[in-house]
Image 1 (cartoon, rainbow over the protein chains, first blue to last red):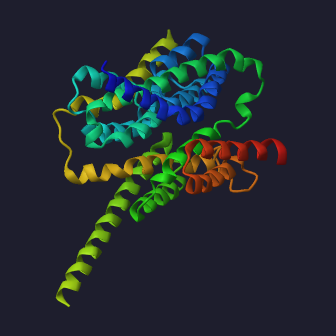
Image 2 (cartoon, helix red, strand yellow):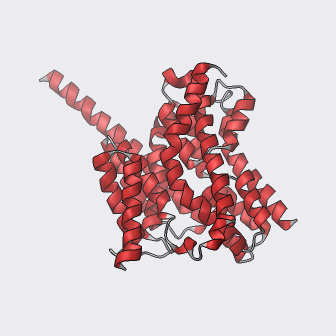
Length: 243
Length: 105
C-alpha cells in the first residue's frame, strides 16, 4: 500500500465516523433483539459477520420471531436490499477500472453509509485512490457493526428495555444530516420532497417495495424538472438573442 | 442448521444485489441519461428511508409533537440546514428524541 493509498484509506475511515455514531444504537439493538427473537447467540453474530445489512437483518429478526419460512425470509432480504442495486450502479464509473478481485471485495461491504461517504469521492481527481477510500470507510463500518452486535448480545442483556428507548432514531437523523446539505438545486429539493411524500403514500406496499418505487419516481421527477429548467433557460437565451 | 441455511441464503441474496453492477462495471457503460440520473439517487433513497422512519415509527402514522422520532427529524432538518455539520445534527436529533421520550411524555 502506497502512502497515498494509506492516506485515502484513513480519510475514508475518518469521514465515516459521524455515520458510525448513528449506526451504534442500531448494532446494539440488533444484538439485543437477536436472541430475544429466537435466534441463537452464534447465529446473531454470524448474521452480522456474513450478511452485514442492517435493515435486512432487523426485518429478518421480525420474521424469525413470527415463524416465517426460511425461503420467504431470504426473498424478503433480496427485496429489501434492492436499493443497493441503485448504489452500486451509481458507483460503477468509479470502480470500472479496478481488477475483478477488488470489485468482488468492495461489493460485500456496500452499505447505505459507505455509499453516502464514497459517492462524494467520485470526481476524476480522486479516481486513483477511490478504492482505498472506500475500503477505509467500509472496514470502519464493518468493525463497528461487529463490535456493536457483540455488545448487544452481551451487555445489552443487562440493560432491560434498551431496545425500547427509541435509540434507533439515530439512523433517521444521520441520514437527514447527509441529505439536507446536498440539496443545493431545485430539482434536488423536488427529489427529496417527492421521495418523502411518495414513500409515506406507499409505505404499506409489501416488504418495503414502496421505498424503492418512491426513490425511482423521485429521481424521474427530478430529471424531468432538470430538463424543463434547462429548456426554459435555452428558450430565454434564444429569446434574448432575437430581441 | 436452519439458522445456517437462513444466514447463507441472506448472504447470497444481499451479496448478489451488491455485486451485480460492480461485476459488470468493466464491460458495461451506462447511457448518459442514466449517469446523469444517478446524482439524485442518494437524496431519493435516503429521503424514502427517512420519511416513514420518523412519521410511522411503529408502523402507523403518528403525526404529533409527542412523537420523538418526528420531532427529532424536524430538529435535525433545521440543524443540518443551519449548521451543515453531521455530528451536531445527530446530537441535536438524539437529544430531542430522548428528552421527549424521557422528560416530557
